Image 1 (tube, rainbow, N blue to C red):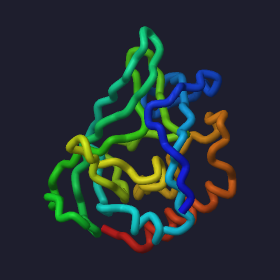
Image 2 (image 1 turned 90 degrees about the horizontal axis):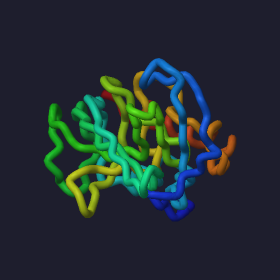
Image 3 (image 1 turned 180 degrees about the vertical axis):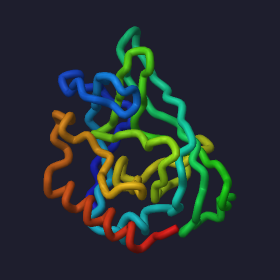
Image 4 (image 1 turned 120 degrees about the horizontal axis):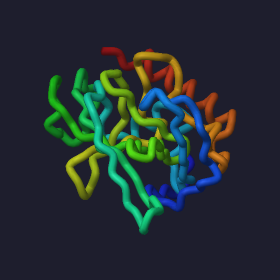
Length: 196
């Protein structure tokens, strides 16, 4: 596993902005992506499984975005999403994770409704409401929520075979075609192995 240091709150690269059609607002939405200094990269599903305290299938119910600002400039962002547990495959530390429970999951992106702007770390896209995901998680050491392993590696969409990643907007070019192929391979293997 290749470790690259991830700074969740990073300087935003506004040059990575782009106007595109958004499923969030059904109007042109501005996308702003920050470059992540650390992204856990996984070459194989087994690496991500071993690095995760929790593996489960859940459905996102809703989420609330938060922003850190310096004046008018956004310096950090995240979303806390409510996820309803459908099935638990791994619970390494014995957390209270039962079918039907709602857990808080921190996502590496945020949507500013007022500014109609989607912020994402390393091309991250928010989970969609009422859609199911296979999640590879670690419990936060400081808060009562779970974090997704590897920014987007640990969020496998189950309602489609598509990756939820906006890499074309990420000027940092952190994720190249080889990594996208690897990620798709990991997702395909994970979907076959973990079923509801």
